[in-house]
Image 1: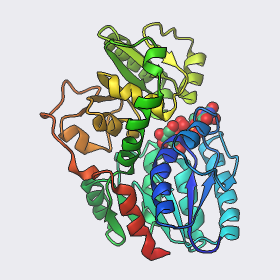
Image 2: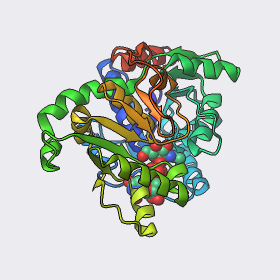
Image 3: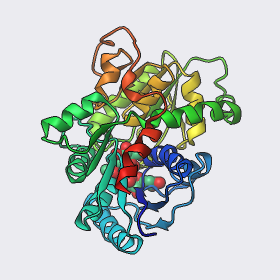
Length: 347
Ligand code: UD1
């Protein structure tokens, strides 16, 4: 390909976002080459998302998974650069805040290829999070900054970035609309886990800030086990968390632990659950998209509008701060189409 879009993905939430946008690129007749860094490599962390969400197979699979941040990001940078030199795309599209995001943005910027950042402008204001470093650097390297919310635009303005900033809404809402329908028709997870007619919650926990601090992880598990007295808590365990839990030797009898779930199974659970407990960015909004309250297992959140609109609270907060109301920022399921419209002039 010479010209066109090269999209760098690597971690689970990026497959979800890319699914919505790649579909819109195809519908618009625009050429896209997918580059999968390999950051997430287990079948239930990667392949299942390509199958369920009908994402075309990546043109390149770089096979860089695991390792310390420097080694992982450095290996991605080398391999992405080589790939971009061959592909010669007109733009490089990156999503979110992972090591794959920063590696893609840096490789492209050094080759003078305009970077498009989807989910730009989010900030936790906590530089101890690897994701925050990835976001800030990626935004400062980007030519087109696609923001899911108004707050994201304000965050960029505070850092002196206004050129190339466009509010497109949240492509995860588009992905949720696709999944809602299909999951109802295809997923049997509620039956498989014997949850029919029961009150239950969905829980995920994988952020390094939680898993890599044993005292904090123990406090979170205590909190969750206490909440499990009220209802069953279904806990699909991310590989990072599984490793840490296995090493800690802590017995967790009160949570219903499963392998990582596919997108449709997760959305079926979200549709039928009572509440969500999570440290994931995506799930905080997916809870809202299913009109379910969320308790965020962190000390801050980038998705401040979910808190202001009464749908989300931090686990340390005593209660939700407002009556529940709609959040118009995320759009009407048209964020992928608006992304295409914003990218097209660069091609
Ligand atoms: C990454 C992102 C995080 C995002 C998350 C989504 C960074 C810095 N963090 O965190 O922002 O919310 O993805 O899940 O990029 N592993 C497996 N199998 C897999 C994937 C990972 O065993 O399929 C192992 C890795 O080898 C590693 C650990 O799990 O030991 C963590 O994976 P890693 O890619 O470092 O980051 P995540 O914690 O998934």
